[in-house]
Length: 165
View 1 (cartoon, rainbow, N blue to C red):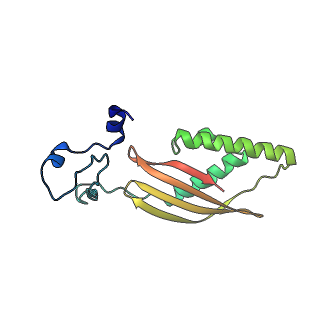
View 2 (cartoon, one colour; view 1 turned 180 degrees about the horizontal axis):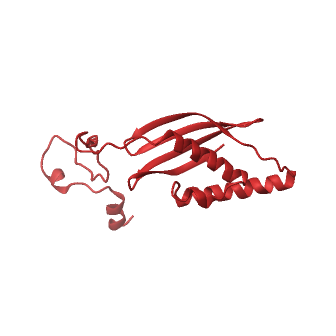
């Protein structure tokens, strides 16, 4: 083994520690070292007096939004009729689901139209600007759940996520 390969094979040591007479063994260079735990972050709370009161969404409008979304999937209402109440992503999602249901109805030759009757509305407000809503729509033969997330955007409530099960 040559002198260069012998030097490469040995770990890097602190030459100063070897030359001085010390009770401690020579230190080797470490590439990793322990880091103290990060301090937990604090969420700044907005004082209630400085925020304007945001009203809860109107329950009648929430019921109508659920019924209209059911009718969109059923094929008896156009998506554009909910233009101001839903976001573009929700409109695209409803259009895709409507196409799938229309294809299924065509294959099974099912021309029945059901009129949904909305049940009680369940509201949950995880934050000041967000309301999550669930509502059950009942027809003669089936019950359908509608879940939506409403966000307060530009001084009005809009559905940013809407699912008809």
